[in-house]
Amino acid sequence: MARKERAAKAPKEPGRIRQMVQVFHMTRRYDPSVVWWMILGFVGSVAVFVLAAIFFSGGSIVGIVLWSVAGLLAGVLVTMIILGRRAERAAYGQIAGQPGAVGAVFKGSLPRGWAGSEMPVAVNGKTQDAVYRAIGRGGIALVGEGPQSRTRRMVEDEKRKVSRVLPNVPVTMLFVGPDDSAVPLHRVPRELRRVKPQLTKPEVLAVTNRLSSLGTSLPIPKGVDPYKVRPQRAR
Image 1 (spheres, one colour):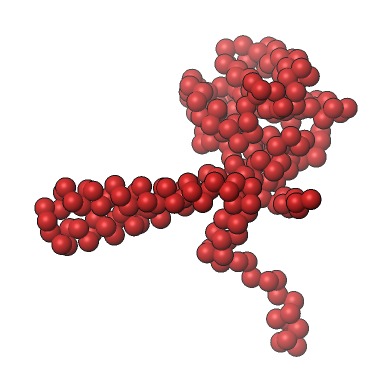
Image 2 (tube, helix red, strand yellow; image 1 turned 60 degrees about the horizontal axis):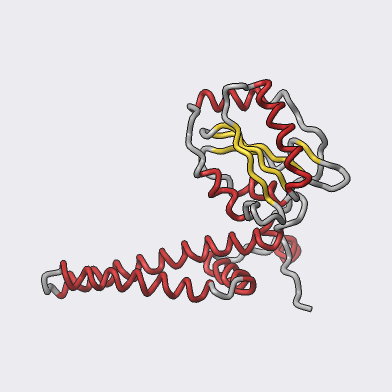
């Protein structure tokens, strides 16, 4: 009976180190330069602290050792930050161009102070072009997913709809698609961070409640989760 209970138990999730190894291999498969960026980040951090030890330790052996240990820890931290950024970029690179890709960004990578749904507020059922909406201290952001020749009108229509309800709230328009002037998928959070805050937190809540009454034009399946996408096999 005990054996059956053990067999019925779900398999344990991989440990933190194993997860990091898996992330590294996935990232390196799509971004080989990540290895060199990690090495550069580690060596550069250690070099900075070694130089600091030479100039500020006053010749003390203990001081040099402490600075060196701090440099190693800083190098590891910088390396992990670089891996995380490149891994996120590689993950979103796999789903770029697919319907719902912007929704995946909204689900897991919106910057602090911004909120948005992975479901679009407007969608073209034939072309699967969509418009997503986020609300934050910078006002309202509308993100068109698809070629600008088709999504620009959708985004402008949504902007007019929002402006009729909230005429004094600033609206930012972004476009994610195949156009040269479009924002790359992985840079959407960065573009939102660059929007200048103009609303207070109570005002953001009031805007959210006001826009909740607008609804959406057409529901579609939820966005793609980039961390559950299976890597494509080389042909």
